[in-house]
Length: 343
Image (cartoon, rainbow, N blue to C red):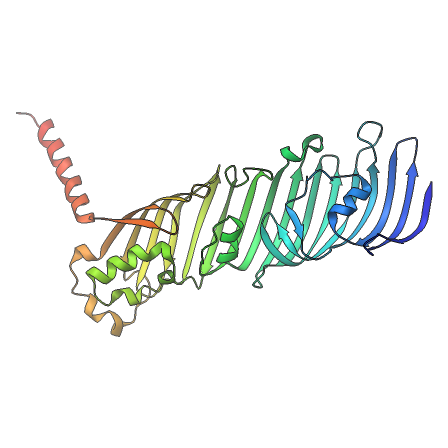
């Protein structure tokens, strides 16, 4: 049975145009169609992916889709597998809890895999997003669906990225970089998240962030007036994520006076920090008139190291006396040398 041309609309008024051909011998449907309608009712009509396999893609405005290929109408009787390709345009919605605008992509559906490639769009605040995302759903089992994505970000607000990871308190800064992520889409997505990447941050003044309140408090107590100069506005890091635990060895935040380096882990699901952070004075370009009073500071105040635990909202900063560490290290070596020396 062939419907050509197809020119219809759904009960909700969504237009569907194109061509349909039903093949009884294969229990398959040949599709060449275009429509603007919500994804769930479309998949229900085609009897594909209607058990929640792609429910992490959410539309707040109906997308426009064009598709061509074949659809297996029965999982038991069809002698073909789903083979569709086309294009999708999403005016507004979210993918994996990340809000996006004016997003376009090519897509392919082959058996138990769906891939969206050449993805382009903008974040809520205007940052650029490109990349691809793949969903695998073994035997069309929605609860077994996993995803893999590779993204390039350009000036995406840090606050928006935090929200995607269920971190809802305010974050300052614009993020650019390459990020790869993967994990299950149902149930414990954050708990089993894995990935890696490199990011750069600009306009992230740390004295506006609760995370660095411990540093600015310490500086205001020990070096009067210096806390107002803690204006780190750029940063970078490489990172890996395994089962929700982010690890980095080279987090760097830079400003006019301070350079702050850090290494450690952050458990995203549990919201637990375990970092060693060091602040170095005179690391970046300086303005002589602003630092004249600093040159006479004791050496101990120019080497600042902290252990940071707790959560992003309530971090616990503990000062580590580097001079004591050095002294203890030298004492330990001296004692070791004494005990090994011949009588």
